[in-house]
Length: 382
Image (cartoon, rainbow, N blue to C red; front, side, top):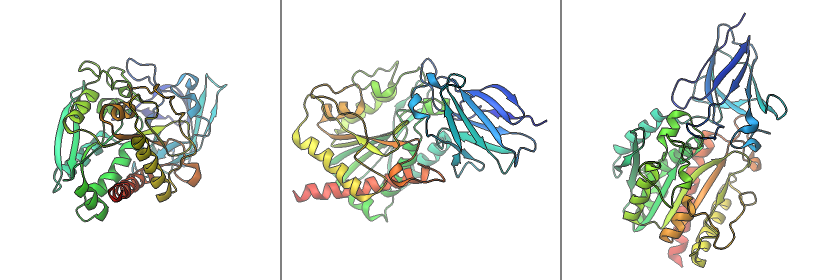
């Protein structure tokens, strides 16, 4: 009889094995440490002679997860080479075992990896930083250290006056955000890229590809090493609870901020969209116009963005200033924004093989840099 071996004892791994029976397993997702959040999973399945056999993996207890609305119409990701991540057919039944996602997959080999979204490992992060740090025109800065002692990496480039901050993975399970960073940095750090060259003339870029390395390594969805949601810490960050936010905000205070983008992923909405800073106390008409115009440009430039679906807009004076986009807009008068990519798919341009993917995330990063250059050139023309 086939025996499954299921493990998550690796970078960003997260699963608990409740039981196995042949090629079927009952599983549960481990909570973020000291937190009620759970949704991210990442594990490997192996077994003798499972190639060609259907695996039935049941992840239970999901009615209590962080975003139960994210499970209907969602398909897990699977890879056998850890390079290409495809869809594994999945169904959600809220009435089974307090909410169960059933993943069915027939592997071609005796080993397969499953994840909530294609992981972006800390090893890949370090490779990215090492490559950038040795690139001409790029400066490396360690902004500080996390509670687990990991460095908070920032790369900087450009000679222009505009101060641009790009940062990602405040919520570590939103791994598509660092794939986006790869695409954006492909443009910004390449001396032969014409868009990057023009952007560097106009701007000084400060890029933090991963704001939450502790949560990333631990396999968390939303929090750092002590269960803190970094995107609710911007008003009063502390060294004891949120040194990541404190370090980035202090660095922003040193440079000022003209334009900022906080890159995320959304569990429920099947689309790429933007969230702004409407509702901050000091909002200016030209500030809002800048945000609106950037969204319009990006919408025109790529079918992988839209403006119909998104979050509700805050009422005047009611914006949550503990969140980075609102806080940065209020603190610096910046045009700031939160970019959200889906765990499901961008339904306006659906992909039946991968849904939203690392490749599309990286391409969107490139598209956003093209949109930023067009936005800047328009503003220069008056």
